[in-house]
Length: 117
Image (cartoon, rainbow, N blue to C red; front, side, top):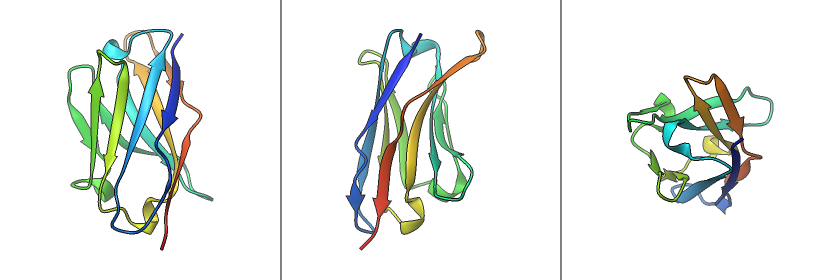
């Protein structure tokens, strides 16, 4: 079973940057599609970015060009580099690991990102 722990959330001013990390343990992430989701108060959780086991990435339109997802299989860690942050990026950010063959997925506990002046 995979355990995921997010870190890096903080309070940042508009236009600032943050890097979120998702450290995995209990298994190896190399066969998983890894994703970052977020949930703002009163809103549904949405997929922000994902990276497949082969390294292909996709992003929600609202973050395209500002956020970059990456994975380091050797460190069993996934990152989300967030630049040019906007107040509407404020949310709890969750890490997800999905194994497409086994049909399982795992969630972290979330990390709070607040963008405010």
